[in-house]
Amino acid sequence: MLFSLLYAVLHFLLEILIVRGRSRARLEAEVLALRHQLRVLERQVGRPRWQATDRLLLTALSRALPRPDWQSLLPSPDTLLRWHRELVRRKWVAYGGRPRRRRPGPSELHQLILRLARENERWGYRRIQGELLKLGHQCSYLTVRRVLRRHGLQPAPRRGQRSWREFVRQHADQDAGHRLLHGRYSLDDRLYILFFIEIGSRRVHLAGCTYNPDSAWAIQQARNLAWRLQDGTLGEKKYLLRDRDSKFTAGFDEVFRSEGVEVIRLPFRAPRSNSFCERWVGTARRELLDHVLVFGRRHLERVLREFLGHYHQARPHQGIDQRRPWPPADEVPSTGGSVERHDRLGGLIHEYRRAA
Image 1: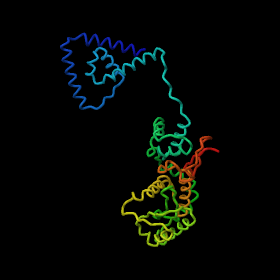
Image 2 (image 1 turned 90 degrees about the horizontal axis):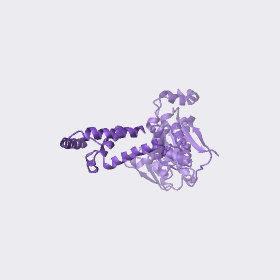
Image 3 (image 1 turned 30 degrees about the vertical axis):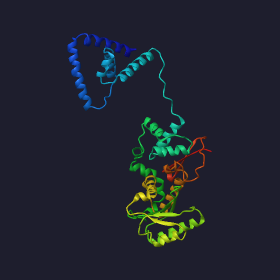
Image 4 (image 1 turned 135 degrees about the horizontal axis):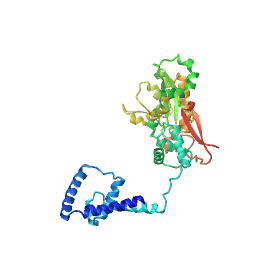
């Protein structure tokens, strides 16, 4: 009511003091000058941002002008009419018209999105979307982004930053259990990991870890994988893509050729040609190796095997439509029951499933 009264008083003052208080020739000259200045400003300034007082003044002034003269104003005629309708709507609401609808409270989906984002600071929008699909909720990553922005949660790179104190506290139990082994390994020791990945299903097979990855060790790991091929564990594979590292000698290739697998050497300095392996390396570093203190080869192998259990059975993958490599794709997620969290690696990795 007060807003409508202020609008009526302002319109009356403009009509008396400005329009009727000056001569017509003076008004036309002033209008031409203002129009020219307005055109100059339109070429230099972007789209203006109107405040509530600006809308009130221009709407009241437009009522004192004939409809064809509205073209001289910076807002379009449609914008002026929309502002006028907004003023009328506020007037009727003040008189007891239709009240505004309140925003509904957070649903189960929104609560689950917030829970996943707060408990997993390194998960992005699509990672949360994949976890929701596994729990039986169909939504897009845009919905996840809208919910997180509404509650003031930042994206994953900024939300996942931690201090060194938080890092040490998270691994306090592991530090105590491995303290005797820590003195046997120096900081200069470097461990190498050999793994194989199935491109179609994204399943990763850990061959082993070593300090000295020579050609004899690589050939032995190739024989181990060949035995799996004979058992049918890896299925019928026809090609093996490998880089041109000197550790992969002719003996390494001969192991796979004897099993009917063609070895394809990738071109020089072309990481995109082996993009699936590069992606897994980045995932393992971001989600595991950058957050774990490794105390030796056996510790690294145990940590990697635990991570691969999560990678295969619980982690959704964008490359295969947010599904998991295992179990098969025909599994229908359950939508009943509460959502439970299961921790791996001392709480570094969280898994979510429906309670039975």
